[in-house]
Length: 145
Image 1 (cartoon, rainbow, N blue to C red):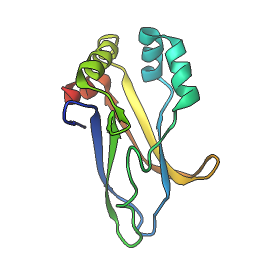
Image 2: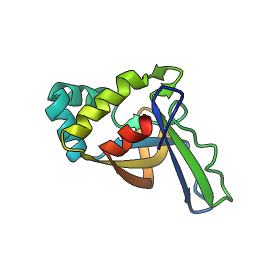
Image 3: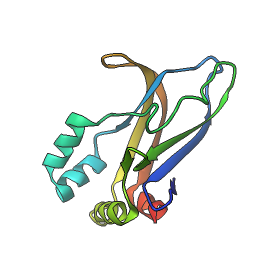
Image 4: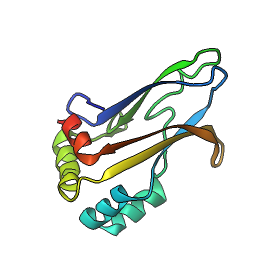
């Protein structure tokens, strides 16, 4: 997890995959648990409900990530997920860091994330899970600074 030019954060994942695995779309899900509970407690359940009804899970390709490293015949991959540093959604550090810090100070919840792969037509057709990851909220704060 690293900071990007005073806006947002980016998460870079390196791993291996079956050589034949390719996909058209990926989706990021923040799993139920501490993170959502903390957001509801600190920012309000209306915020949680709004996010879940409008943008969650987050469709990653092509806006927040891409699938260009997931080609047939290759095992190694690198995937970068951009949060708040894309041209159509920029969140400045003076806005992002204090919000994340409030959540860290309110219990430093563990954020559990899952990235699934598949295809998008009218809805997301999940073919499988690409990877899971987790981080404490304070880790995200420290990386965004």
